Structures are given as structure tokens and as C-alpha cells.
Image 1 (spheres, rainbow, N blue to C red):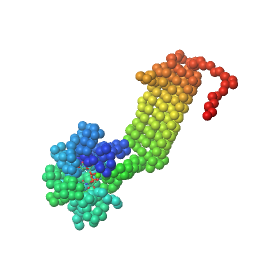
Image 2: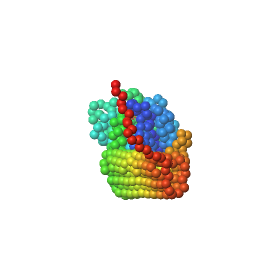
Image 3: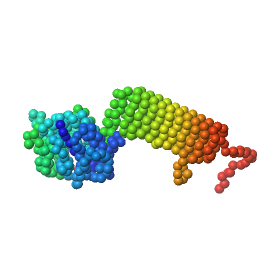
Length: 454
Ligand code: UD1
Ligand code: CA
């Protein structure tokens, strides 16, 4: 069956108390509306139209893709008025699926069931909630057929006891919309043109209206407040965590796990508590991640151990490496196999060869480091001359003592040893020792300054 999608996303979201339009608030690192657009794409509809209004250009700018049409709703007079604004953009596809920009977690499979149920009439996705407060309620007659929807604010005390709610998501016959939408009235508690009133119009036209109950009520929850947003975030994270557990990943505590992007895991990966994964992350077989790490756009090779409190961003990390605790690896870094990066070491835009180590308190930036290099504590690559960045090259088997400055551009050739406290500002030949000659003297009887008496 051919169908198109309209996503209503023009509302302000007053209850969020925010300057950011509600549909742009992130859930798992992606705007609410982005989740809905992705689901619409997964369904492979003929056409997707987004109705935007509040925060107009911001909403448009947050979405990319040639497949999206936009319709501006200004001012925002209700969900029915919103769909009316989309009319000029609709195609002839016989069914129009209406999604809400603030109902982010509905699954494509559920929507396919709804589309099938619409047939030649209309279908509305409902859910049965223990706490239905705030939602529109589904009205059914004695035979159980849907007869209409009443908003919480317009409902009688008896209607408020109904636990079957309107998720807002509907599949409607496109050809009828041009007749129905202008008939909507705004004589209700909110003085708005409610899309929900369209169900009573369909019933009046003797069209079959089917109420499809979602199997998992959680996927149909809307976000109206930050409390609901936080609850949905956790529910979504638990969904992701459950998928990982089933795939064989150890999560020490699935309640303390956050994924804001894609996470691919090999066999026997272990993730300790309070880690955040952003962007595209892949962890090969046997990788273990210690507690409290933030890992963004990183690929980590098999058997590598990331100790607690590391921040890794935009890096490729090879197999059997030991990183951290307290290491920071910044974009453009490539670590080969068996590299050790220890505490308070920052690595930026550097390639580090097999078996090399920087175990304590160092800055390795804009550098090419060969194999089996040992970088002593407190070593700094001075890559910035105040105007430009320069590269440091450290060849294979170099040993650098503690507290060394490498003033770039500079090359330390294969096999060189650099003594502690040396400032290296000239390229060196292979092998041997680099030191800056210094003397040490001892002044016997020297007195420390004392505090002046008041
Ligand atoms: C709506 C439904 C309610 C349902 C609930 C499910 C109506 C009248 N009520 O209520 O029955 O239980 O969703 O979550 O439809 N929007 C516009 N333009 C507008 C107003 C809203 O585009 O003029 C968009 C919003 O951006 C939002 C969606 O429509 O994405 C829903 O609007 P909202 O104000 O949150 O409706 P609810 O009060 O939640
Ligand atoms: Ca809502």
C-alpha cells in the first residue's frame, strides 16, 4: 500500500520551560524529531512532510535530506490546524500517516501494523496506561468500536477514568483530509483546532475507524516535560542495554549505561559503569572499558583495556593496548598494537607505533612516534610556536627521559636516548645520547629567607 508521512513538529512545548523548540531536545544525543524522521525513513514512505513553526528555521536546519518537504505553520493553532498546513504538500498516496515530533520511540513495526489496519478507513494508534493523565482518551461504543477522542482538558470525570489513550499517531485516508480539516472547530478548553476531532468526523462519514493498541505502551509515550524526557531517555537506554546484553556484551550495570550513537561490540566485551558512548564506536573482541569513560567516534582493537576515567575522541586504537586511567586521546590519533598510554597523558593528532609507551603526565601532539619508543614522565611536544603548529617525529627504539621538551619541528632519529630534563630543538643523527649540558653546584651554609617579624 502506498502512503506518505506528515510529522507535526510546530509546537513550542511550553511545559519544557526552554528556549529550544521541544522537538529539538535530544534523546540519546539525537533530537526527538530526528528519531521520528529516521523511523519514517525506515518505513520507506512515498513522501515525508515536516510541519514546523515554533523555532522555524532552527527546526529546518536540524534536519538534512533531500527527501524532506517542509510546511510552515504560523501561528500554531493546534494539531488539526498543523495537518491542514501540510495539505498543499501532500501527494496522491492514498494513506497519510501522521506522526508527532514529540513521540520519538514508536517502532516501524508498530506503524506497519497501523497502516495495514487503516485499510479503506482510518486507524489510530492507542495505548493502555496505568497513568493516562494528560493524554486524549479513546471513546468506544458498547460494541467496542472507536467513536471519538476527547482531550484530558475537555473530558468529564468519567471519561478521565478511561485508560486507553490516543498516542496521536493516525493513518488517515488522504482524499478525505481536504473535506474534514476545514470542518474542525476550536470551541474547546484550549481554543485549538484538534486533529483528534477528525475521528468523530470519520465515524460520521461511516468510515471504518480502527483503534490499534500498541503492544509496548512505552514506545508511544510523548515528551511534554523534562520529567517525561528523562524517563524516555532511561527507557530507551535500557532498550539499547538489553540488546547488548542479549548479543553477549557484559554490562556491569545496565542502568548505568549511555549510548548516544552507534555501538558495535565483538565477543566478550565488558563495560563497567557510567560510560558514555557517542557517535560511531566499535569495540572488537575482548575489549574492556573501565568505569566513567567517555568514548566518542573511536574504534578499539581486540583485547585492549581502557582503564577508568578516560576520554577518547576521534581515535583509532589498535589491539592489546592499555589506556589510562585518566588518559585523554584526541581526534586524529592512531595507536598501533600494544601501545600503553598512562595517567594524565594527552595524545592529539599523533600516530604511535607498536609497543610504544607514554605512561605518565605527558603531551604528545602532532607527532609521529615509531615502534618500541619509551616516552618518560613529563615529556612535552612543544608543537605550537604561537602562530603555527609543527610536527615532532620520534623514530623507532627511541628512549626519552623524564621532563623533556621536544621543540617542533624536530626529529629524533632511531635508537637515540634523550637524557632527563633535555630540551631537544635540533634534529639528531641515529643512536647515542642527547643532553643539554648542565651543572649542579652545592652552596653550603645557604640560608632560606625568613618571614619578616611584625
Ligand atoms: C496530543 C493529542 C492527544 C494525545 C497526545 C499524545 C491533540 C489535540 N491532542 O496532545 O490526544 O494524547 O498528543 O502525545 O492532538 N503541534 C503542531 N502544531 C500545533 C500544535 C502541536 O505542530 O499547533 C505538534 C507539536 O509540535 C507536537 C505534536 O503536534 O509534536 C503534539 O502537540 P502537543 O501540544 O504536545 O499535544 P498534546 O497536548 O500532547
Ligand atoms: Ca505531546
